[in-house]
Image (cartoon, one colour):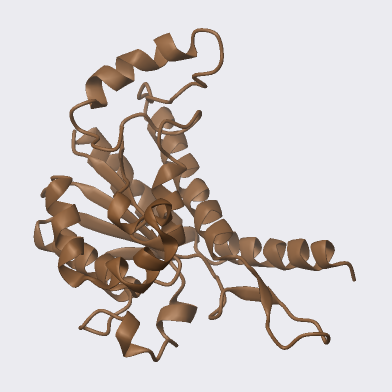
Length: 250
């Protein structure tokens, strides 16, 4: 079988797991977000560390996404400021998670959607614990297959917990333990990571559910338009004016 066919077929199977096995969880997670927005509170989206940073970037000022949320993008734990520095060092600094929560003014009544395929790094765990401490609801998108199996204490938070154990509710992205799905006879090393793709697919399934529920409640849902299209920038200005002082990454 050709590699691209094998890879795509495996992805399809993982996507089917996400949708077929979590109906109740998608309903509960989307209800939390809908209720938070209707109560006038903020919903934060955060991918704390490494490749998970794209989790927040992909909903930020993106056509068809909610224009009433706070994507948290911290350069200290972004690959753009050095992949080695971030993955091997910064995301393992426990107090940094608490600082990021405070800096973004996450408060009681807010909801925080935290996306981390592995769900173990200290910034992620410390951040989730701090969110709960201040009274925010935590929704996680993660893969317990990894966090439940990892035996390297150097990369874990001091509690040893995984993100799925801390969150009020978690959605399983079904990434395999080693994040890799391809294996051939000609080499020992597996390849073909899927963690980021599965995180984003699960995220999109959640945000589209939220948008549909808001619309069905008769709410005028704030949705970004494509800023490259004629009139797009002007249309988006009304949302930018509302968010400018609230979203530090904007």
